[in-house]
Amino acid sequence: MRVSDTRPLMGVAWTITVYAGDRHAGDAAIAAGFAEARRLERVLSDYDADSELSRLSAAAPTPQPVPVGDDLWRLLVRAEEIRSLTDGAFDITVGPLTTLWRQSRRSGKLPRPDKLAAARAAVGGDALRLDPKLRGVSLRRPGMRLDPGGIGMGYAADRVLAVLAALGIDSAMVDASGDVVVSAPPPGTAGWRIAVAGLPGDDAPDAKTLVLSQAAVTTSGDARQAVDIDGRRYSHIVDPRTGIGVSGPAVVTVIAADGATADALATAASVLGPDAAADVIDGVPGCSARFVWQAGDGIEHCTTAGWPAD
Image (cartoon, rainbow, N blue to C red):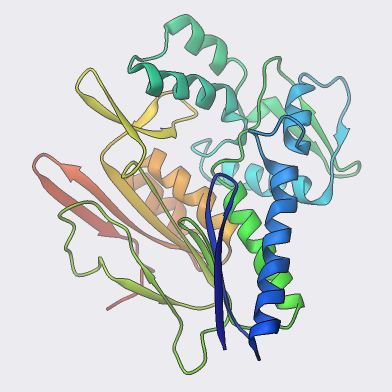
């Protein structure tokens, strides 16, 4: 039996869909899934001052490594792996720059050079150190602020799917407003059908509905969150290397084995652009991507080698 429910979590709408033996089992599993997402919100939110992540950020710089819980540790380990893989195009220490860029989006003005320089001084790969023996985290620069926005939703969706599996739900989909993870296909089907987001006018043959199982897919870009400053369009996604929003319009969809990877690589791919991002994505097993961007008056698109064929 198919059972589905939608609730607001982490500032967006989450939908959990499961196939269960009966309505009661489906409702119970979905309730447990939402409870797990709420628990993780209290751990990973950078908007909640009392979350574990926010309290860690508030302690910067830390004179000694700060022990953290399992979820925050796993998130930071994966974030550092993706940062290294993308040469800093994804960087969880980007918080000071995203805070500054939110102000620019509200004001319609680029950041002042002095404020941008101060924020950039608190960001970078060597600002964060992980101690595996202690499971401890060192924040090495004043003013640091961790921003899980490009990986936290995918990680949380992965954990929710794991909770559902532990309850005996073999076929499920968790959709965190664009960060989607799925397990086994619905009964009698080849997989879960997931629409690929694009840009207006994107009618290319590969702009289609994906059919996926045991996978994750994330779409990132400026279709819904963008600002025009001095005649130029900028995304809400910040390039950690410059502190400025990525130029658009552009959208990238990434398929990966898990939500955290799809989420983080979609963010990095938005920063890197199609050519550089394709080299990264082609090197990750089970990962593929579709890029769409505006070029003049037209829409361009491309896919990596592993993108599902028609």
